[in-house]
Length: 168
Image 1: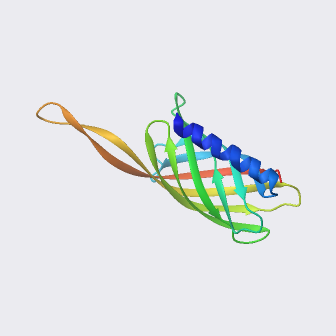
Image 2: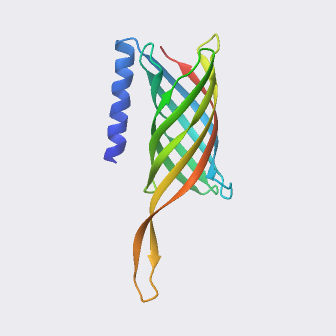
Image 3: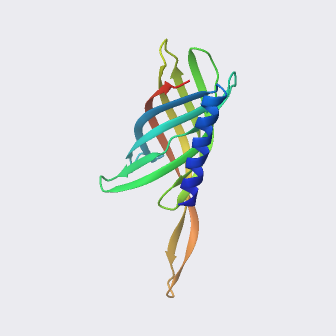
């Protein structure tokens, strides 16, 4: 729980800095699917978006905490933090790289791309595609009784559609 408090404190500080020194702060919502690379076990993914961008910068710091709904009966909390590089003016191509923590004791890294279309208003629709690698501890039973835990990892893909709103 201390990780959640630290992340919450960080984004409160970012929001205060954004308002006080005229940086850019975007909020939004996104939804999509998350799956392994073969799409054998797809799950729904719903997230909120918080994006902090310094003035005239070509990058932004992002988080999109949310939930992953697995088989309509299992909900996993997700807390990513990633850096987005911004290329373009009206049509933006944005490579991303970062890490995440899931509340079922899984963590990992992610990399991908986001495509955004800047409108005349403060709303910006976007499409995101990410590859990720999730790490977790797995119990391996022994033939001689007992067993051991081993760290393992699996690849995955996340595809989302979203809409963000520029607060400042």
